[in-house]
Amino acid sequence: MVNQYTKKLGAVKFYEDRLAISAQIKSKGLSDNDVIAFEKSGFSGKKYDDFLKSRFLMETFQSNPEKYSLKIGDYSSFVFELQKMLVKKGYNIPVDGLFKENTFQAIQSFETKNSLFADGKVDAVMLDYLFR
Image (cartoon, rainbow, N blue to C red; front, side):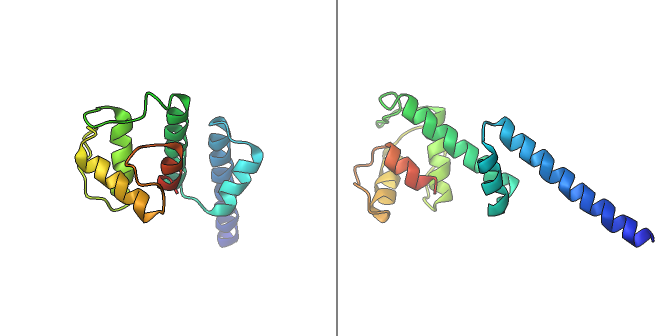
């Protein structure tokens, strides 16, 4: 009898957790269909956080592409986040927020590897590929 109760209590806790995660996702602006897709995908909370960060960075870039068109010597949190993503993709560059030659070359290499126009510039297409 205790085993059955424990199993049912575990199931209730599982569904409570799923509802809490769904509510959190919806509070970030996602629709019911987005929540369903998220749940079906099996994303972990960490992957969801990464998704939100990538979406935020893309929206930030698209809000003012001129401002975020980077050149050697630029220093910003946008560069810092970009460098973190490049490191996750296997590029050995410092994550310091400073857009230097090594960051430029990593972007060019990433673009070449993904059959993009390898100009070393950050644009919406490059960011889209980076966040995949």
